[in-house]
Image 1 (cartoon, rainbow, N blue to C red):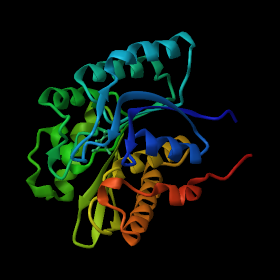
Image 2: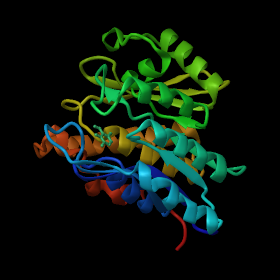
Image 3: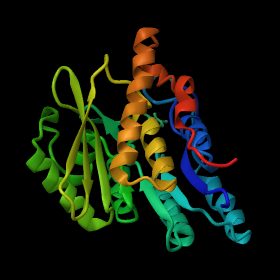
Image 4: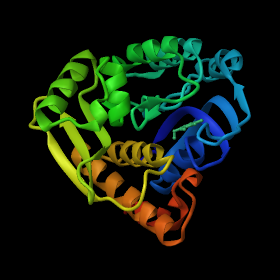
Length: 279
Ligand code: PXL
């Protein structure tokens, strides 16, 4: 079987274990070839008090053009952190060009956390992100991002299953057949992932809550979902693997007192992601 390829449209951040620095090794562990399309280059992620941010927007069209000229093909496209309004148009164009039948798109609408949008998120960019939803087959928002996409108040993160289902149904009608709302604070001991697939009853996946929230968790989760789904697992199973993996990595970080902004020590468990089969 030819090796599968995934285009990762995301930022390159030097320190802090997020985006491509996390996603590329994770999908590689699952024997998938990653093709990086950078959106920005940062020295650290934006949760640090200081970071260098180089917006890659002006270079992206020329960068992508070579893939078009070379008739490059991908099996999946995963998008993450986007740094400018124009970038969303570039990403939409990329998807329209490369999303042939059978190719799936995972959109991680990286916009914010804990009820707040990131500093790089202008209202224009936030509005634009809503356009991208309709190109997604899989959407992986956290609760903050779900609320931002739906123009809903965050309500201190308190939503019941009925409200979550209603929001997912509305979003799904715009495009994505599969949605997982990640990292919902369920109680003091557990975190909930709300798994919605169109036409099916939503399912809840609870994982033990270990310590505080850690940046980069969403990137680890969306990478595992993309890889597992591309390797033929169904959506729920892909999310379950992702939640278990993230949980294990967080456990290691807590045990070793790794600062919360340093991301997840995903390197420690990469071996667990290796899929059986040749070679
Ligand atoms: O993990 C999400 C993410 C990705 N990329 C950058 C970020 C963040 C979250 O803060 O700052 C640059």
